[in-house]
Amino acid sequence: MSASSYAIELRDLRKSFGRTEIIRGASLAVKPGERVAVIGPNGAGKSTLFNLMSGRFASTSGQVLLHGKRIDGLTPYEINRMGLSRSFQVSNLFTRLSVFENIRCSVLWSMGYKYSFWKFLAGLDDANQRTEEVLEMIKLDKRRDVQAMNLTYAEQRALEIGITIAGGASVILLDEPTAGMSKSETSNFVDLIREITVGKTLLTVEHDMGVVFGLADKIAVLVYGEIIAFDEPEAVRASAKVQEAYLGSAHAESPAPVGG
Image (cartoon, rainbow, N blue to C red; front, side, top):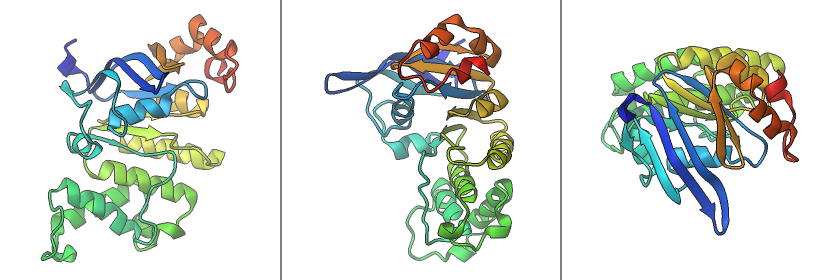
């Protein structure tokens, strides 16, 4: 398969902070439409990997390709405009703006409006219609006029994902999207993620193995900055190499990723 056939590809990606190498030659190739969960012990470099893909960190060496085009070295906003968007572990919202206004901010940039002081937002029918569509997708249409600060935690996470997808990105990175949620909230949220990412490429860092095995088409296992396995969930679960990495690591969170 040619490079352009992949939605996102990492080639021998490396990142060092001073003398400490965090990402050590990570390679990964994700096809369009695949849902991939990135798992690994604490300190494995999962968030760093996302920061490299989204342009928040510059790589030390190696390449990141989005639909066959190199994006390593580009700024986050340039990468976003090429079709990759991400959410973060901690919600990053305009807390005093309404749900509708938060989504519309993302929509305006994606539709090319940028900064314009002579246009009334209420008159931007295409942007407002797209905002309404996203609100329905994330099930917050009935909360459209509520300030983001007054949403429940689960609703804030849903709003953040709405902002992430509002720009029409084809590749979505979600960093621990269900962290801090109750079991029922997590179940509902997984259903939401599955629904709104249909036809998109999804990479998610996730510690809840119920979420991983319920959502992912494939699992990438990152241990000490290297991807040691990339396969379908059952194959990863059965991998002796993965079991050894988790059970044999002093930093492993638990054997749950390979034991179910």
